[in-house]
Amino acid sequence: MNSSAWRDLIGTITSPFVGVLKSVSCARPVVRNLGSNVFGFLVAIFFQVITVPVLLMCWGSEIYGIWILASTIPAFIAMSDVGLTTSATSSMIEKITAKDRAGANTIFLTTFFSLAAIAIVLSVIAIFLIQGVILPDLHFSDGYLGVRSVVTLLIFFGAAALISAAIHAGFCAFDRYATGTMLLSGIRLVESSSTICVALAGGSLIDAAVALVTIRALSAIGQGLLLFRLVPWLQFNIRGFSRQVLEALLRPSIATMAMPAALAVYLQGVPLVIGLAISPAMVTQFTVIRTMSRFPMQILSMFNHAILPVTARAHFAGDLHSIEKYVGLTILSSAVVGVGSALFLSVFGSGVIYLWTNGRIVPEPVLLFSLVAVMAVNVVWHPLSNLLMIVNHAAAYAPLFLALTAFAVLAVLAVLTVFGVWAIAMPLIALELIMLAIVLRGIGLVLFKQRNAREIFLAIWRATLEAF
Image (cartoon, rainbow, N blue to C red):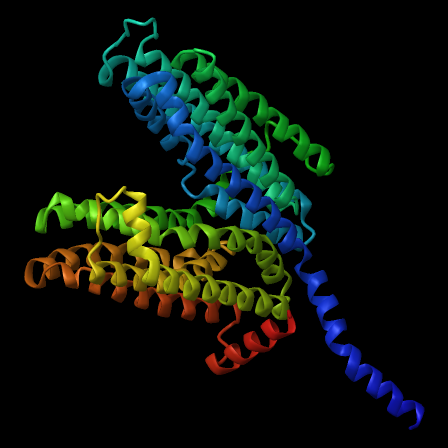
């Protein structure tokens, strides 16, 4: 055998290993991002499990209930970014890819000052309403200060969290996603621990609120200082706000806001019409089954959110091969989680719900299987839709999703009235299938520039196999 033949043979034997090494190198940012997401997921799950029994034990059901109600107002403030962080992250990645650091700096400062202004305005309005209109100045016999004081402090906490979100967008855009996510998860770990420690030490709601405000305010400063240290070319300039940049960011951000609006219509609207058409008991059963069926999406989100920044960079760099890999890995992870979860919930779902509710709820088999089917389609199109959102193309699907969701809720009411509970999921499955078709078309048009569907499928298939 001559030397050329030997080289060909060695190349044939080693090519799979070389491919694996290359794919591992390509996937390293995703793996790093995924690790930070797993940490955040574990922190959230741990405190969801431990916080409720500890605070109930220390404060009792009445005081803990007031804490939950008081916490809803700052939660709304913290989520009031009108989609700016998503559109800003995508735009900053685009500028960095084009080597336009000054443009990225302007987008970051515009986002920061805009969210700071939103936080201030919303806080002033909320405090005015709380102090003057909504809440009576309640006091408790055991020495707790008034609800107004607790809520006012938590409003400041929500404002600090909104400003913190602007800084976190900088971490995501400037290739520091893993660092920023680990830092944010650490902040939440300290905040949750502080609430538990205050309660165990016999502290009041006001003590817990003071601790939260102090921790989040200091951490937001720490986040900013760390970001400027890790990205030395980033400059803070009080005159860095640009009205033109804000207008450009608002166009895609408004489309992005259609997604949470649609989810709110779906999550709140369907139980409402079930209660009107059947009974409150069926609302409870539906909500419990739906909560369980949405858990796979929470797991899948850890991987999906890790892949979003690298997909945006590949898109703005015109790296079609990497896009094929990332889309393929997204579909593969969705298929694994979707099929595995569907099989598990179909076989064991009734038993899990029975144990979870201590025998209080025995799900209707038809309702269980229907909502599992809804989940199986949702876990395919929703992660793919996030790939469009991260490149500022939520307009390709989000407004349609909002309109279709409103129509589906009305359709649920109609089918329940005519056919009963067994048909409850028909409009929901139809909604998911239509959204799957819309998102797949958007992926082809936006990420693959209108390539033939068969060509796109084969390219994704080859790229996905290459990753292994």
